[in-house]
Image: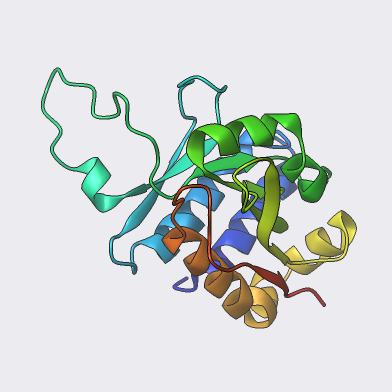
Length: 198
């Protein structure tokens, strides 16, 4: 399976069908693979690392690191000592959760303060959050919704190839923009609202 979005949908379907996963963490691996597949075609390449340690604002579920951040490791030296993900943090929730409500939460506001950008997802909605242009407070910079509801999402995931043909291009383009976005003094020059549902 060469289409990363189709592979993502197929993996989500299979995990859910097993009945053995958790609502959130079991799905980290398909999300990471999707982000890495999109990120490997960028310059610089972007890699998602999941389960970040607490660097002062809590433990984000992941971070988006550029290739130069992953080079130069020496045995006995912590490669992430003081290093923050150049493309922001990731916060993942289960598909039953409201990604837009999570994006407006105090938890995400703390992450934005620390990491500049946060990609919030419930696996079906993706919300990029950053600082207000004034530098105070947070706002949604861009979002991408794959379905109108959790039930609709899981119904569509049952046919991963068809779903990827419908939603894949929009999701991939959205993720590319997220992975090239950089936090600069709390500002981004543009933001988008995208819907690839139905």
